[in-house]
Length: 151
Image (cartoon, rainbow, N blue to C red; front, side, top):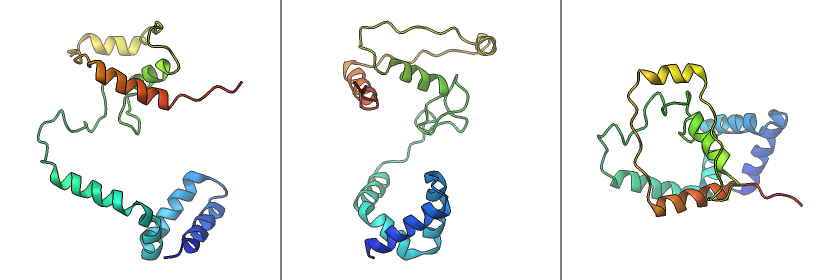
């Protein structure tokens, strides 16, 4: 399939969505379900990675432990989880740490009254502390998402 066909369909979707990328994406996915050539043209550059992921998933033994599977309700303590699977509180804490040096103190927020009352009757399990390599990995991920300041 030629790139011009896929590019033309992408432009059509953007025009149909009146410039909204999110709506254009939904339109393009709907078209790809109906048009095998469009689906093949969109997926072709990623086919090797898709096949590798499928083989990796098939080669991994199925996990039976509930801790390995994300809960249907999402993470604890922040309400609705984000698309990344982090709770709102965990995501806010991560965003608060972005752009700080590792030695800077992190300002603590007071918990809202509704959450404090809910936690009083709950059993709280402390997460095990990550090692130095975990901390380095998390800092590298956080630094990758920090926007560079324009001077």
